[in-house]
Length: 180
Length: 258
Image 1 (cartoon, each protein chain N blue to C red):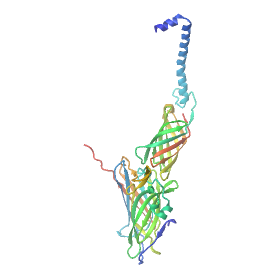
Image 2: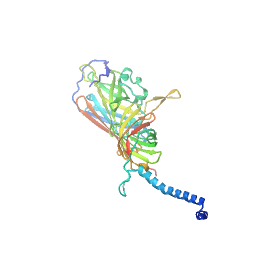
Image 3: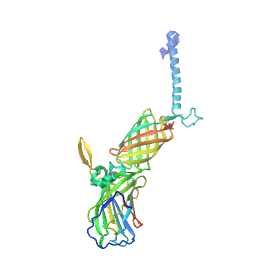
C-alpha cells in the first residue's frame, strides 16, 4: 500500500506506465462483468423478462445427439438407463423408459451437458419387438433444464433407438432444435 | 377359422357313435400365480384355465376359437430376457419346437382336449410350447405350439399377439381341430401355461464353449399393486358364445418387524 502511494506520487516514466497499466487493468475488470452479462444474455435469451422487455431474441440451437446407454438396476416394465451422448452437444444422459416395447410407451430424459447445465424432456414411444431387439420411435418435447438451458423448450424433436434385451444396452438418436 | 399353415394328422382308433354337441353355456375358470413369488425378483407366471359347461360337470364345451389373457401391465414380458430369438411358424411346423432356437422359447404348458368319438368323448393331453414369433404388424408375435399324440396326433400352431401398454394382453386364435368327418371338432377343456424361466434352458457362448443357463424371467415390481395382481381371460367359442374369468394374485403377506 505504502509503496503504491509512493510510486504514484513520484510522477516518473515508470510511474506513468504503472498508472496506465493500472487503468487498463481497471477497464478490463469493468469490461468483464459486461462481457459476462452479454454472454449470459446470448446463451439464455429466452429468460423471462421480469424487468421489462427482453434484450435479445430467443435463440434456437440444434440438438442432434446420439447416446449409448446401459441399464441401471434390474430390467422390467421400467428401464432406467444411463450413459453418454455426443453430437451437437455432448455429456452424460439418463433415460427412463416405460413400457418401451408397446405401441403406447414413454420415456423421459435428462441430458447433462459437458459445458454445463442440463436439458430435460419427455416423449411417447412406439416400440416394435424383433426377438432380442426393441426398436422404438417417438416425438420428443423439451420440458426445461438448468443452467444455460434453464428455459429450454421445444417440440417435435425426433427420438428413436433400440434396446438390446441381451444386456439391456440402448442406443438413441435425438434430432431437432431447442429454443433457449 | 382353420389356419392354412396348421396341419392336423388324425389317427383315430375306433369309429363309433358320434356325439352331438348341444348349444350350451360355457364357463371358464382362471387361476394365476407366480413361481417364485418375491417382489422385485424374476418369476415364472403360471396360468391355468378350465373350460366347462354350466350345470354339467362332465359336459363337452364348444371348441374355443379365440382366447385373450389380460396380464397386468407392470409384468412386462419384454422387460425380461425371455424370447431373445424368433421362431418362424414354418420352422415350427417342419421341425417342431426343437427346430427353433432355444432362446426363442417363452414358456411351457399343457392342454387337455376332448375328442368326440364314440358315445363318450375321449380325453387327450397335448403339450404346449410358447415361442417368440415374428412381429405381427407393430405388435409382438407369440406362437403357441401344441402337440398331441394319441388318439389324435396333431401339431398345431395357435398364433398369438401380445399387446403391450397399459393393458397388456395375449390374444390367441385357436384353430379348429377336426376329429372325424361329420363329427364335431375337438374341444379344449383345460390349459396350463407357464411364461418364464422355469423348465427353460438357453445357451450362450462363453470363452468359445456353449453353456446352458436359465434365463431371467418377468420381473415382479418391487411394490405390489393395490388389490394385488389382476388377471382376466376371455374366450370365444365356435357356437358364438363367450365366457370370461378373472383371477387375482394377492399381495404377499409382509411381516412387520417389532
